[in-house]
Image (tube, rainbow, N blue to C red; front, side):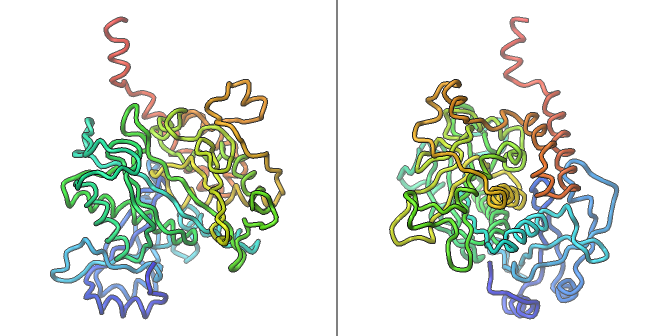
Length: 445
């Protein structure tokens, strides 16, 4: 994400940019970005020894007793924050790996979980590349009556408006931080937008996705607007997804590409697809982790709920973009169920784990679905063996709790803590009395 590749270069860049404070970033189990700042005088020692902090801040809802942890900055993630005031000195950031006091990795650090799964891929000879499409909304306020900024639709070219400037400024800030951007556009719902990041390796992309979410919000706040990655903030409108393009490479060769296959898909790609389809219900708790996530995963709003794959068809869980002659490196699959409020470290880890499970065990890939799955009857889907994703958070918890694949991908400790956190969330949700219930029942019961 930056030119910095070692500790000495970080120090040189800090001096060259007149950096006075460095924010050390890490992510908790639920995907919330955590941060604390050190002065420039502490930077050299922090690069050598890390910085101690209270580890209970990484636990999510399920807080534990105070415990010592060490945040070890990753020099390759050094970047100056363009939106911070430059008067009196600049502010930079670095992502951290979370260690125990003895220097060993903390098993419940999401960044470590992703690294472990990337190493599994590397041991098989693969590098995992990811290109997510994170959608979001702009609202005038962040209260319970969200007011949109526009009434535009998909790819609409509207007259000059505030949202266009917000997207433009966001792209500029991302590129200043070394994060590649492919394009940006208006999405389907009113005031819904998307900025697509240029694909890169899984760890760099997870760091970039966390940075992207913060930059979108920071730029919006500077203009008196609120940005949200909530999966389904508006009733009867499309929710926000994080369609995730992914591929495996062996060196410079795309392992998903086969010039002799009618669809240009290699056996590796088909086995990867089969792994994702087989284990999709189990990993949905990670890719769609909030109660609100399941308000998006319903038929009729371009959110896939059925376990099928197809070429080009956007109603299926997995889409294979059409191959363009001469662009073997662009061959990829697109997994369409994740939403942008997930923890990207864990989401990338479990998608990769499911795909690798298919490769290692040579899962048989079903034929692509040539019809619109939403238009099929339940009997037709059953006859074709097309299952569905969990319909709500409680079901997702139940499926994930019994999943051997998820325990393997996350590790036993992380798996247990995630389940505990999600049960707390469900319990908090199920005792609420909603406006819908009051309007539906109070006058008649």
